[in-house]
Amino acid sequence: MTSNLPPMPSTPPAPTRSRRTTWIIAAVIAAALAIGGGAYWISRPSYDDIVKDCQKALIAQTKAGGKGKPSACEDVKDDDYTALVMSNAIDGMSKKDRDMLDYYDNGTIDGSIG
Image (cartoon, rainbow, N blue to C red; front, side):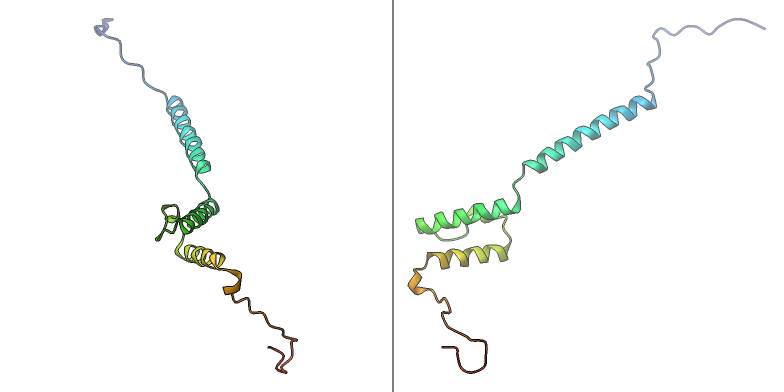
């Protein structure tokens, strides 16, 4: 039996990373991504804000005599955009040109609509 040890390496071996360190790094990265994503989501305007901005742009465009869809209305759904255009057109009319369905109905079928 010999007690000869193997020769010593010239450089020490690199320390190995433990599982705990890997999980800590992964958790820190996940938390940073969650915080960043939350901040981005909170900073985005809501759909109601986008519609309000579109309505303001339509009013300004009408006053300026412009045509077409303003760039502020690009993210508005087609049905909502059509409703905004119609509302803007009706609001731009004079009171005399509006049909307000001004009639009296007493609730019976006796020809009271008139």
